[in-house]
Amino acid sequence: MSIVLRNAEIYTANEKAPWAETLVIKDDTIVYAGADQKAQWQEAAGEAAEIHDLQGKMVIPGIVDGHIHPGMCAKSSWHIRLPWTEDKRKALDFIKKYAQEHPKEEAPFLYFEYYPTSMFDTAGPRKEWLDEAVPDRPCLCQDFGEHLCWVNTKMLELLGVDQNTPDPTALEVFVRDEDGTPTGWVKEMAWLHFADNLFKAIDWKPPEDLKPERLKPFFRFLEENGITAMADGFIETDEQIASIYEMDMAGQLHAYYDGMVRFWKLEDLPEKIEKVKEYQKRYTTKHIKINTLKLFLDGTNESGNSASLHAHINDPENYGEIMMEKEELAECFLLCNKEGLDMHLHIVGDRGFRTACDAVEEAQKGAKQAGMEWVCQPVFAHCEVVDPADMARPAELGITINWSCHWSGGYFGEEAMNYYTEEKWRRMYQFNPMVESGALVTFSSDVVTNYELHRAAPFFSMQVAATRVDPEFPLDPEKYLGSMRPPASAKLSRETLLKGYTINAARQLRWDSILGSLEVGKKANLNVLSRDFFQTPEDQIKEIQCEAVLFEGQVIAGELKK
Image (tube, rainbow, N blue to C red; front, side, top):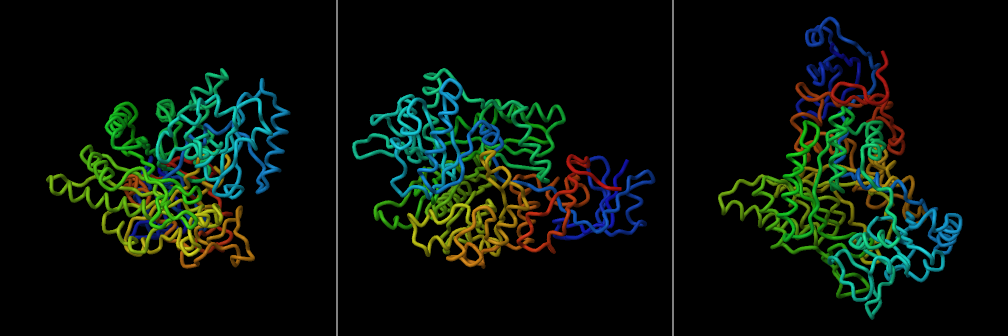
């Protein structure tokens, strides 16, 4: 039986026919998208069609989140929520009280999230401060940006990390005193390399399995918020991808899933490529594919370890960190291209962006000289600060830009000004020049814990990007008019936002032939909205709900009213 959705305002995201009034769905596929003229849609629908008059409701394609972390969100379910405060003493008092109320026998390892990055200066926190609150067991406090953490002395001891322990990589480091002694401030989850030592010492492991039951709440969130396709920032474990495959085989995966495998440098890339091939053989389905290698090229602006073209304002020798320079990165692109694989890069600083663009350009030239077709799709995630001279390069080089919209306002505050001038801080989060130059710009949430999962709701994210105001973390209104992150010219238009969350993101995932727009022959993934996205005041966009979510023609959340 066919389903007819008529009398609707249907944004198709199809450039040739951007609007329609009626859709006809047969099985999992759209067979008609056009005018609300019965004579036109009746033939496609047939006599026994189930007809729904949407009474002018707006319909959009299913949302595509181009960068999110299901494994990390699921694994964080046991973390302890810190009350939000800039006051170190208040945070320590809460931690101490919690530890007293939950003795070591009950909670052998305490993991708190989050403390504001702005709570500490560029020297960071000290282990001794945390020791006052929790001296008897390992304790970790995660910072708001998820790239820094604060640990106590007991945790360092049980990890086996001391002044003689080398840092895992240039990004993953234990901040140290002059004599090399770790201070208790840890960057980029460096402690995870030594986690087995800790868990063996306390004879305990956190409840971080990634079996289907632990992942299902995350995927239910996607369903309820109209997200019908996603790119996983990186696959956490073999168990995670096996569980997602198991869910799909059981008919419980209501999303197209694009997975990535993380690598660190050219040296380990061949091994990771083999892991991709293993996953492809074992877990590829019509809903699951794994075709991408993920690299963290630099850190974050707020941590001072993004790769910058300019020295830090208080440290003239410091330009941040970068995992590899142009030559090595170009070799990585060439190797992935040879294997027919894509690369997705975490890039934050302007030097990281320029280095990556140079590497793509060099790799493309190398492929041409070798008589090799260029098939690798480079995706640059974040790109928070880009030099004006490099804005047109993504369009020229075929680079896809992926931005996490809910960061567009005050989410990370002014912390980058610990390292950058205010002028450079004001140049961050600028994507309209790339859109105008013709680059493929896509959108995502990049949420990594349950703490912030609600911010992955697409209309929340779109509101922040459209207003440059964060409803939860507004900038100081006495300094920034209306708490808006400047400049106003960086606000993203509603059409840009919808395209970036639908057809453009589908192109990033290489699924645009079957999803991302509402047109004949594509899968019937769509959302019926409670309000007209284009008419809703910009400061109310987050109030828009998905009244019905369809995945391959089936209602998976809400309902279609007759």
